[in-house]
Image (cartoon, rainbow, N blue to C red; front, side):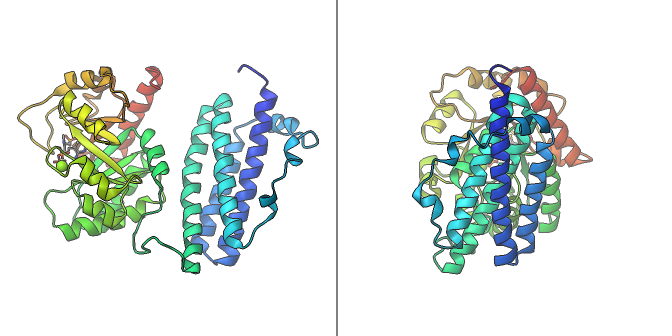
Amino acid sequence: MNGNPRVVYRILDASANRAGEGLRTLEEYARFARDDAEMSAEIKSLRHDLANLMKRLDRDALLAARNVRSDVGTTIQTKSEYQRTDTLDVVVAAGTRVAQSMRCLEEYGKILDPEFSKGIESLRYRVYIVAANIERSLLRDRGTSTADDQSPGDVRTGPQRRDLLAGAMLYALVDVFNTAEKLLSHCDQLTQSGVDIIQLRDKNTDDRTLYERSVVLARRLQSTNTLLIINDRTDIAIAAGADGVHLGQSELPIREARRMLGSDRLIGASTHTIEQVHRAIGDGADYIGCGPVFPGATKSFDHFPGVEFLGQVHSSTVETPRPAFAIGGINEHNIERVLDAGFHRIAVSGAIRDAASPGDAAAALKQRLLDSRRWRAVD
Ligand SMILES: Cc1ncc(COP(=O)(O)OP(=O)(O)O)c(N)n1
Ligand SMILES: Cc1ncsc1CCOP(=O)(O)O
Ligand SMILES: [Mg+2]
């Protein structure tokens, strides 16, 4: 590590203390002002998870680097930092402080321990959700909440969704299952196995069922780092509070869907030719699906752009590249050909759905993607 390690430890020490103090401030509110056991427990869990992650770092080096006396920050004061009109102000300031401190831990932690940094990234997303829930509960109390309180799962902001999308590698398509419980149980396995995006896609169900499953799944996923995308149906994606919609070549035009969805939700687009890639990105798609690559059991095709298309996409000179997911018949036996074409993001259905253990199948695919990304030094 180049430079002065003492500086890095000093920043990490200060950021960890600030994050812990801010979490405690949020926890006191959840516990004593709202009597909310679930919210308190989540914040307490965040504090403990942060403390456990900090154990990965050299404690003595952190303490040795601490130097309060020469900390110029102790004399830099702003008027507003000593003014809090009510608990909402306290909670908003604490939530902001925690998120900013987590970002510092994540960025400077990369110098010492990338795994530490990844752990902090996961905590950061959980902090966004907790802070949004606390703030929204306060706004509801005040009667100033503008959001429809019945809009389930609608707690992520646009930037948070795009943050999660940027790091997404494994995308799973699921159907509605016979019951909501079975769908949720299946998706719990997927989120715990590292699936980054779940798409609810079912051509054999009615609108009401698709909406109801979307609502319960959106609620379930809001406390995870997994995005929920609804296939085809922009209206249901909005109504259910999902993170976005996936549009094929025969669904709503992207620009029309964007008008309905706004910029805070995500739009994915199917592409089968390089011209469609350029058009989808030009029309504002946040990500693209590229395929079908191989024949699969979920959907039949007359034509397969195949791996060659993936190579074209990978080498295309799109001005504003977007996350691109290979899709179509991908499984553990042919994933290497997808990786060799330069892709490190895949969307799958059958490879997980039809596995003896969907969770294990998902975890194995995710590990292949992570290993490939590491060895191929993908940015
Ligand atoms: C991630 C992803 N990529 C492509 C598709 C295919 O969408 P589409 O062409 O609209 O076909 P259907 O899925 O609607 O049959 C997708 N769903 N997801
Ligand atoms: C919906 C869709 N669009 C292109 S391929 C495909 C099916 C993906 O499922 P599987 O991974 O089982 O081939
Ligand atoms: Mg479609």
